Image (cartoon, rainbow, N blue to C red; front, top):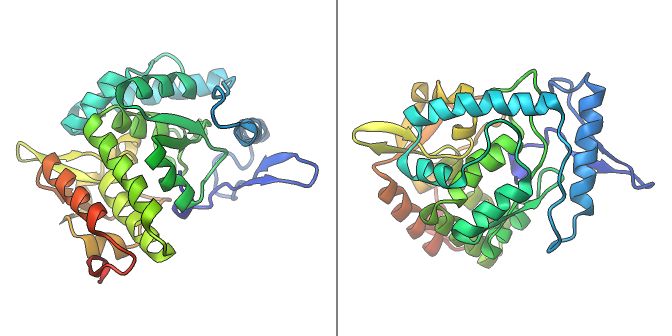
Length: 291
């Protein structure tokens, strides 16, 4: 996931080549040395990864598999009630195991067969231009760790549940995957950091936390929303606004708690057209970004 989301747990490599992950005091793994060391090993494997080679497998703990089983079951039930049809279609095609954490490599193989996209391991948060630009090459840079077992239903960090359940389901749907590719090509042609950050913010409110209406009901489409058991039960309490580029590009967003403001499309086709038009027309000095 991209750097502007948060610097919650940055990955550090010292002069001797040792890798560590720095946890803030309010992180649930702050006092868990085993979790910290495990996260560091996973980050080290990602830092050693050479593009084009097989994605390294991770030896997950039984506790991590148990967290996956718990969240998989809860999310499956909540998706049936709250997820939009396009997300459900992608999720069905992805067909993740429910009894164990999947390896990123096996999820990547399924995604690649579906739409040509693939997962590439990331040690932690990735530079915003690098992250989005790689989508133009059908590559999604994803973390391989899972959230701490003491806080399974919500994570401000982009872990395997977020990456694979949320974005993997998107990337197994051709209509959503086409938006991701267009997003990557858009960022590649933009020169200014300000324009890229504005595009990033629109993406956040549209495909991380976006809503659509189906049969008169609010449905979740965003990957972050659909990978959070807790927030899926709360999102209808947020202030719901219609899609608006200027507002979405300028409104600040939160990662450490639930989003107080969400944006809703009239339908998935409306969301698709809205993003397609925005990503095609936006420029470095676009009036579309004027508040």
